Length: 202
Ligand SMILES: Cc1cc2nc3c(=O)[nH]c(=O)nc-3n(C[C@H](O)[C@H](O)[C@H](O)COP(=O)(O)O)c2cc1C
Image (cartoon, rainbow, N blue to C red):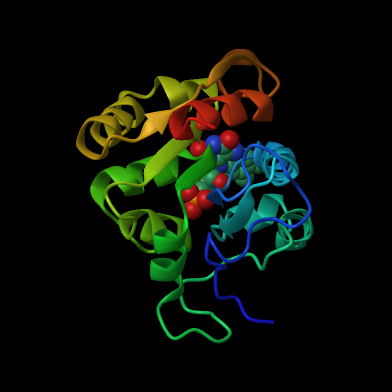
């Protein structure tokens, strides 16, 4: 099966007439416990008519299997910078050009630091770097409350917002996987979807 991203005009989601029909979303999943919520987000977007391609960091695959996202999106999942089946152009360039919106959910402290620094050593940071400047990017940070309170994380996020114009949703306060209450919990999929709809005026 070809992993060539479908062109937005050629392949609208045949299963849905939803408001996202014809919209192409690159959903990037990084290594955090909130990865399970990204599966719900994938399904919601598909049900709304979006074409969804999922890219995962190596760390993300420790939390969720690519097969889950492949099944929910109906598309191959990108997990490697170097592996692609039959492309005439670089995979990261192809998906970066293809998408109308990139959502990074969950966005780890690590990916936030990489984006701020311009590091491109995984498929998520590399694809983000290759995006046309006009493509909207939405981050849903997710981390332990002490990580979220770390000023380096805050500085990196500010750099991304100010320099790249990336948008963020959340995080929220609430129960965390480390069994404490605090700020840093990823926004729920419905909130991320609503923020994304605002960005694309869907
Ligand atoms: C059980 C567990 C849960 C983790 N949860 C988070 C998290 O919610 N947020 C985060 O920023 N890092 C979390 N980490 C650490 C990241 O997985 C780690 O920094 C990793 O290198 C991130 O890689 P990536 O940004 O390439 O996906 C967690 C690690 C473990 C072992």
